[in-house]
Amino acid sequence: MAIRGRVWKYGDHVDTDAIIPARYLSLVTPAELARHCLEGLDPAFASTVRPGDILVVGDNFGCGSSREHAPVAIQGAGVGAVVARSFARIFYRNAINIGLPILECPAAVDDAETGHELEINLAAGRIHNRTTGRTHRAEPYPPFMLEIIQAGGLIPYTRQRIENRQT
Image 1 (tube, rainbow, N blue to C red):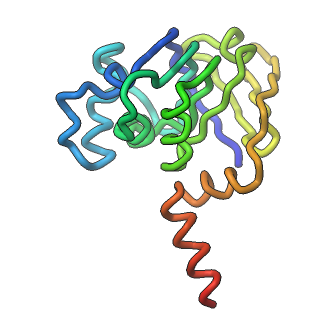
Image 2 (cartoon, rainbow, N blue to C red):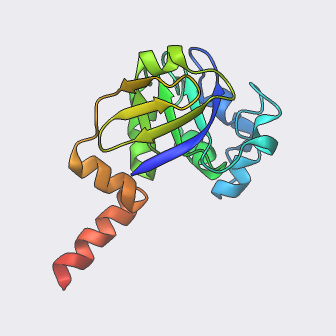
């Protein structure tokens, strides 16, 4: 699975309230949440992000409350992947559960700037910065986690497995 997109770079400790403010938690669809994604951090993000763009962030991305709305808002905005120095554990699990590709790779974070173009190979854990020409390695996903992401999240993955057992 390859992802290619333009970088949006932000710093450390971006919490779930910065990703999707609590006043929008009554919204339920990814499209509704996407309209407010990162608005407290970058008011232009939601209106200018393009499908496939990539968030590059610092340490502890997704800290704060365990709301699943945060990765849903990011995915709903069309973000193809998130590359971070590190993720808050609950955000990491929520992202995988909804099928949002995320990778930890400090070297790729250091190398990328807003506007750069990245190409990510999830199976290999390879992050290529097409702007600088440098390639970085993240820990590749185990096959079962790649299957969850490719299926679009844990629920679609589980449905597929149940259906495959019945045939």
